[in-house]
Structures are given as structure tokens and as C-alpha cells.
Length: 398
Image (cartoon, rainbow, N blue to C red; front, side):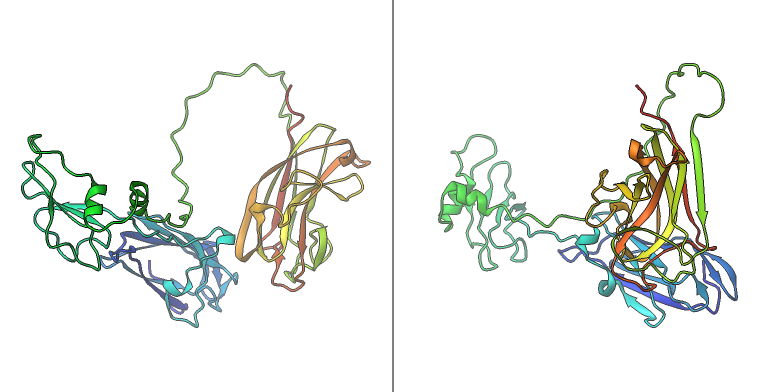
């Protein structure tokens, strides 16, 4: 669907080829994150995922909304680009499209950052091969070290050429016997290699046929959800009464987006007016507290959920499950310089030192980082509220 007039656009192009030079087949998906934007002149804009299909030459073109259009909020949003190839593994990465560059070649901007889980697929060189065909081999066929079997007279006889050297096949092939069992035993491939100049043992010859391993490819896309399972047997009758799960929900919107302060040691995240991003719930020793957070974040600070002690100090980190944090915080909240959404569940077990004088257990969002400007934020703003829900699901069943 065409974009409304007056908005800045960027034309994205790219050409995708196999290592052998043949074009890939498939498409690219451009998913805006977030999908809903606000324009001062046009109101709410809901962007869908744009799918651009490669043509027969492996080339793709798409015209997209610039990610820094001055008429659109929020700022700092990105596209999630997913490569969906029919005959190869693809990548998924974040992409910013500033209006200052009206045309962008994906070959110049696609990231290759292994530390962030993003990779470019690099195919290792192939090993030597035994090829076959009808008639003598063409000089353009195969690579140095390959062998070729002429099957023009098969099954009565066949002729082997090789190995190919300096880009040329030997002028004369070697008969390798008939296919009806009447001819003398043919020579092994190793014996033929020795006859054609190979120097080494059988083990060395076999090793020469194996190319080096290629680099590890990118992680494949998550597969589709499986079919619904059969309905389980009815459970035992309950003891009556309502739900036994106690809940507590906190929603914070009073931050001014001035950014996180520097934190040389792990500390509870607070808004610009001093509101701590935490929630409390009545609990007893042995109770399990399920934490479900939902908020937007950006920047270089490390984040984690923490169960506090009865004095308000950090007692247990969710990322490590202990009183010692992971070096770079919770893996699910790894720093991101693009606008990202954090969600997911964690589970803490309440100990005797985790309940305050009011009988409450408290879970907080904590951070660690050296930057102190607005480049690192946890959003707790009217348009982007910070939310957390605690559920006390009781002790582990016996």
C-alpha cells in the first residue's frame, strides 16, 4: 500500500547471489518496530510488513518510510529485516533508514555483528569432486583436482580423466572397464590419481578430497507452531472457592525521558521524579513469585529483574538465579541501540530474608551502566508506560 503524500521515503535495493554467482530465490520482509506511528499532520499511521521478492537476477527494490521523518513519532524506531530464501539460510537484523540517504544498497548497511547474534553466512570452499557426463570434459567444467568420468559407452565401458590441473583436463582418458562384469577389474580412484601425478599415501589422497569446513551459518528462523495436542484427562475436583493466585500490578508513566543516570554498581531503575520501577506482593517463605514485565527500552545500560531483601537491597538476580549478577545482565534484556520492546516471565522463590515488616516481597528492575545522558532510557511515559504484574502462585507442590 502506498504511503500518504508528504512523508519522507527511502528506496532500498540489493542483489543476492550464491558463492557460485547464481541468484538467490526468495524475498525480504521489512517489519516496522513499532508498527503504529503518530504523524502530527496525518494522525495515527499503522505500517504493515512489506515483502519484497527477488527478481530472476537476485535483485530486490522497496520504497519505505524514512525512520527519522520529522513529522513522525516516536523517534529512533527501526525496521526488522528478515531474509527469507528458498535455497539458503537467511539473517534477521535491525535497519535504520535516515531520509538523508534517499537510496540505500543493503550490501552497504546489513550488519555482521557476532556478539549480537547476527552473522553473514560464509560458505566454505568445496572439496574436489568426481564429475561425470557424456563425451570428453569441457575445459570450463570442474576445478583443479577434480576427476571426470565419460559415460558415453556405459554400461559397456567408461573413461576417466583427471585430475584437472592448471585449468586443463588431460588429453587422454583411462579406460576403467565395462559395466557388464566381463572386463578386467578397473583401477581405484587413488591408483588413477597416482598414474596422473598424485604423490602421497591413500590417506593423504582422501584428505585432499575434503575441503575445509565452512563458517557457522546464522541461526534459522523459528519454525511454525505445531498442531494442538489432544485434550488431557480431567483433573481432580478442587476444594471450592475462587482463584488461589494473588496478583499485584504496577503501571508507571511519570518519567520525562531524560535518560538513565550512570550506575557504577547495580541499582534500582527510577524515573526522573524518583519513582522506583518495582512492585510488591504479599508472600510467605517458599512462595513462588512470577514476574511479567512489559516496557520499551533503548541504550547501553545492562538490565535485570531482582528480588529484594527485607531491607530493600538486591538479594537475587533473575539472570543468574543467585546473589551474583551476570556480567552483562539478563540475556533477554541485552543492550540495544535501537528502540526495543521487553516482555517475558521470570520466577523467584521467596526466602526468609525477602519479606519486609508488612509481609510483602518486592521485585524491581535494576540497571548497570556508565552513560548518563538520554541515549539510555527505560520508558515510563504516558505514551509508552512501564508495566509489571506479580503473581504469587504459592509453594512448589509436594
